[in-house]
Image (cartoon, rainbow, N blue to C red; front, side, top):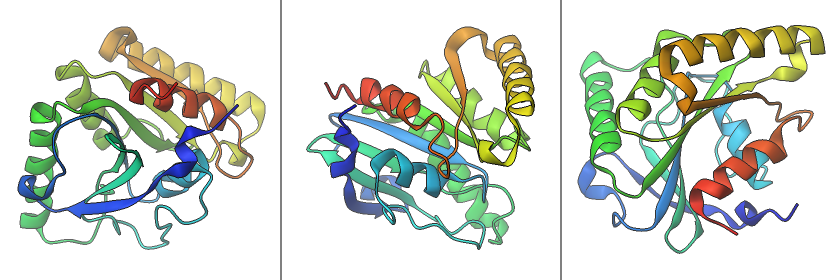
Length: 200
C-alpha cells in the first residue's frame, strides 16, 4: 500500500491557541498516556525513525506538536498525559487547552488514542475518547505493544476493550491491536488516518 504519510515533517509546536496553524484543511490528533507507545506509533505510521521523539522519560511532549503531511494535512501529537512530572497549574493549562482544541478546532477530523494493550482504558483514555465523542469526532484506539502478548491474549483483550467501548460510546470508536515493533496492524491504522485526512 502506498504510504502518503511518509512525507510527514515537523511543522511547529503550540503551547496555546494563538500558536496553532490556520484552522483550515484536515488534521488527526494522537493522544496517549505517558509511555503508551504514542511516539513509536507515529513513527511506524509515517515510516520515520525519529519523526516523534521516543523518550524513556514520561511526559516529554509538552505542547501540541504539528507534523505536515501535505499542505493543509496535519498529524498532531498531543501532550503525553498520565504521570508527567509537571506542576499542577501546567497540567490544568494543558487540560483546558486540549478541551478547547477539541471543541473549537474545525480542522480536527479524528482522534487516535494509543494505549498499552497490557493496561488499556485508564481514566485518561476514557476522558480523551469522551472529548472526541462529545464533539462528534470519530475516534480509533490502538492497543500498542501487542508483540508483548501472545495471539490468544491479544484477542481476549481486544474483545474486552471493544465491549467496554461499545457500552460507553456505541459504535463511534474503532479499536485494533497494534505493534510498532512487529508492524502488526500498522497498515490498518494508517488507512484509518489517511481516510480521515482524505489522502487518496
